[in-house]
Structures are given as structure tokens and as C-alpha cells.
Length: 499
Ligand SMILES: Nc1ncnc2c1ncn2[C@@H]1O[C@H](COP(=O)(O)OP(=O)(O)O)[C@@H](O)[C@H]1O
Ligand SMILES: [Mg+2]
Image 1 (cartoon, rainbow, N blue to C red):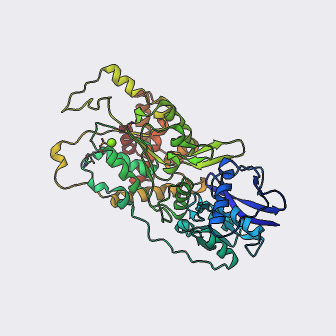
Image 2: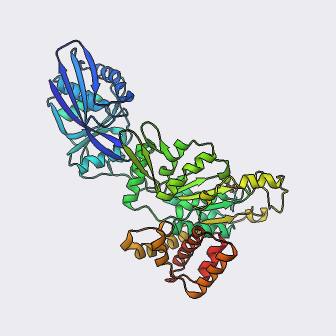
Image 3: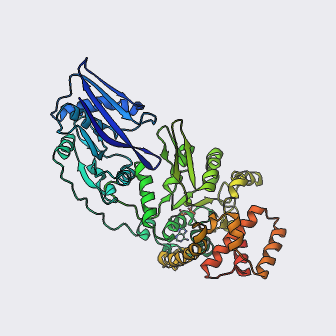
């Protein structure tokens, strides 16, 4: 007898429906899965058999054939366990219906029939809604994540037995709407804790306002990591759509904190310098997002940037330019968004104390030059702001913090972003750092003094065309922070400081 269950496969951060047909026919006992299942899906056969038996049902003693359609896309992962098991039970008459075509089903089974949390539940729920399915049968552990999508009947289940009941006697369960997300200050710390470092704070405010990449250079213990983390907090709050995207990426990566719904705080990711290229940009046989996509809409912090392998830094260039990574696979190319503020940090030299007044540097000029050259020209070309950070004198480290709070800085950043949005509304919204050169020239009308200053600087520092554009972008952001319509010489002057 033939049965059919609907499920979905996740590609990138999107999900596409997969129809699972199960035929139980007379013949020698066997269990075959066809329709381009990869090893992980074929492996599920033993789990499904055990789960069915251990839940008190009988696994058919006949020939079981499972077909996954459409056949031209590869199916991977363990979330087809539950729909296949339900298909087998429907085909052998345990379930009262043969066609379970109004709900999408996903979930991984344990041998005892318990249902494990799955990856990518949010994209699957969104796909179910978009394709007008009535409901979603999902692992109970993923309820909060699914609750983000409205307009579906939800059947959260903990075991195969519960899943069978949910099909035989469907009673939708209203999913608890999630509590308010954490305030970004609570997640990333408050800028008020940072003492001194006025220039670096200013650079990070400009970076947040215009979406610029920053390089912080300074000795260990000067607060680089501390300030980078707080920069995620001065970005404007995520919009609902942005939060959906961030949550979907974490969902596909299997990194959604347990029992959490929509992620509300801007991401802050700080991968160690020993990271591989795949872990950084994404990839793998079942493509998974890398750190740069987990940092989407937030901050990617690369501490000790010259210590990253050269190759890893080079693969970063493309996504920095495009705001996304494309991972090509034989069957299908998938894309992960990756628009983040890059904050790099480095010591001024290998020992860390070059230029420090209180401690001698032990490095030779050659060592310093070699260290410095590990960041290639093309990569530096994508960094708009460079700022030196010096260690605070111990006297400044004691006593109360005197800095401005995260919320005060964020208010200015939000205002500056609103100005940018208003200006580029017709050409598609973009932060200053991502404006195409053509639009950049148009929105950066310089007054004559500013123009003269920039031309003189370009001659004196032999600015490349790229570097010239960079100064222009940063000037535009500084003017936006000041609420100025036109870019003046004081804005260009400040931008030139951060080269
Ligand atoms: N400007 C600062 N204001 C307040 N505390 C600071 C500052 N700079 C450093 N610290 C203290 O020193 C610690 C180490 O700073 P960190 O950010 O890790 O430095 P870096 O990344 O530059 O090596 C911080 O956790 C903080 O307690
Ligand atoms: Mg550090």
C-alpha cells in the first residue's frame, strides 16, 4: 500500500518541500530509500526500524520502498527520520490516513522513538507558511523557534507515539510566544565600562554608523577586545526581518540556544585565529554557514588578525565585497548572507610593545615588517578605518568609568543610519560603506574647501582611487553623525585621521 508524507530540505537558509512516498509491497523483507538520499539519510533506516519497534508498533515484514521527490536534489541530514517513519506507519495502516499532505513533518528519531531537535526548523516553518500548508509537525524542542512564524497549526511532539496521535487526532497546540529578547547592553556589555580610548571609541561609532570595517592596532590589554564586543551593542536594534534572517542562519547551523525564539541581539562572533577556511566562510558536504554568516547583521571580530593563516584571510575578501558567500555544489548552489562590520585587532609588532612608552619592544625591524605584511594590500583595501590604541596608564584604570553609555552612542548611530536610508531610498537602501561608487559620488557632494583638502591629501599620501573612495565614504558617515547635509572640510579632516 502506498502512503505519502510531506517534509522539507534546507538549502542555505531556505527550505524546499520534499515529498516522501512509502510503498509497502509483498516480497522479501527489505527497506530501500531512493531519490538521491545521501549517506546520512540511508543511515536513518536502522534508526527508523528501532524507533518503530520500540514505540510498540510493528515494522512491516514486507518490502518497504521509500522515494524522496523531487529526485534531482540531494537530501541530507537526519530530519527525514520522522516523516519516513510516519510514512511507513501510514502505508501499513497504523495511521488512519494515507496522504499526510496538509502538514509538513520533520524530526530526528532516537532508537527509543524519542524525537530530537532538528536544524533549520525556522526556514522550514517559513516555507510551510509560504506554500500554504496548514500545519507543521515538529520536534517539541524547536517550538520557540517555530513560534516566530504565524498562521500555521503547530504539532510539537516528543516521541513517535505522540506524532502518530497528532496525525490520527490532530489538536493544534498554541506555541508560547517568546519572552522579550535580551537588551544588547546585557549581551555585549556597556560602552560606559570603557575608560579613555576616545579615538578608538569614535572610530567604532563611525564604523557602526556607516557599516565600515575597522582595524585596531595596539598592545595587549589596551581594551581592543572589550571595545569590539561593545560595538555590536551600538548598532541599531535588529528589525524583525533582520532578526528572522539572523535566527534562520543560527537555526541552520544548529546553534540556536535551546528553547530560544527569535534572536534579538546583534551577533558578535570572535573566531580564534586557528580557524579553518570552511569554518570561517561556510561550506561542507551539507553546506553550513560559517562565522561570517553567523556574524550577519552584527560584528565579526578577528583578534590577532596577522596570526590567521594567509589563505583564510584571502577567502574573506570576496564575501567582504559581496555581503554573502556562494557555496557551489554539484546539485545546487546555495548562498548565505554575510553582511557584518569587520573589526580586526592586531598588536603593533609580534611582542606587542612597539611604540609603548613603558615597556621596551624586543622585535627587530624585519620582524615588525614581516608581521605587518601578513595583512595583504587587497584586504587592507577593504578596511575603511585604522586606529591606534595605546594602553591606559594604570592610574586611569582605577575609579569610576567615565565613558558614554552604549544607549547614548546608539541613538546617534541610529540617527545617522536614518539619514543614509532617506538618501538612498530610491536606489535600494545601503549603508555608506556599501554604496556603489557611482552613488557615492552623488551623495558625497563636497564643498570647495573640503574638495581642496581631499585633493591635497590625495597628492600628499598618494591615495589610490580605492583609498580616495574610502576617505569619501568615511567623511560621508562623519557628516551623517553630525547631521550635516553636505560634507565639509572638518568631516574630511577627521576621516583622514583614520587612515
Ligand atoms: N580602556 C579600558 N577601560 C576599562 N578597562 C580596560 C580598558 N582597557 C583594558 N581594560 C581591562 O583590561 C582587560 C583586557 O582588555 P582586552 O580588551 O582584552 O585588551 P586587548 O584585547 O587589547 O588585549 C579588560 O577586560 C578590562 O578589564
Ligand atoms: Mg584581545
